[in-house]
Length: 205
Image (cartoon, rainbow, N blue to C red; front, side, top):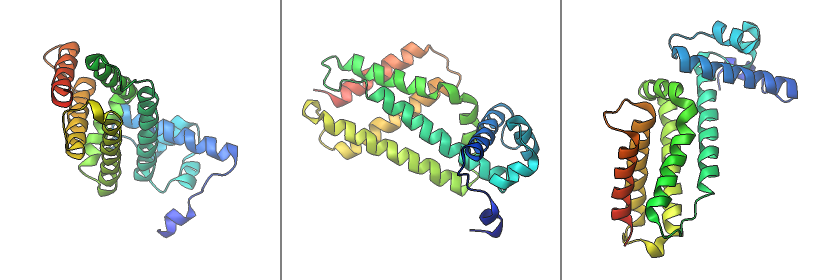
């Protein structure tokens, strides 16, 4: 830990916790609207309703708050996904309906992060710490996918669950990102329908 990092405040009282949360939320909005490189600490502090000096008592620089924003993004996204997934009956005989609900749940989880996700794609390629954080999130997603496959393994025709979990996670993740964050030439419903048909044909007897 650097000397500057050691001097930043770890909030313990409610007021300090709320101040730091306000800075993180303001940074998320600005990074999403303006981009990382077009946002500075003075703008973040102003958007959070705090002084620039107060900002630096919690974060050593803009990069530090971006990493906190990313951690909050990951935690919130994971909580949303888990909440939606808890509603799914993995023993539903209608596998098309089951997987359609899964894809719709992931799309709803991504909706509020469109602007930030675009900026995150840029930062992923330019900052090793951010790359590591995102890679850890992806690996957690692959592990969770494996756990869900194991829950319904008696109905699956595939035998290598670990390899299948990677294929399923990467396929769903890629197409959900295309639907949520990229322009596309055909309708969302057609993309979802083909994705679900592909997965049903691959996974189930």
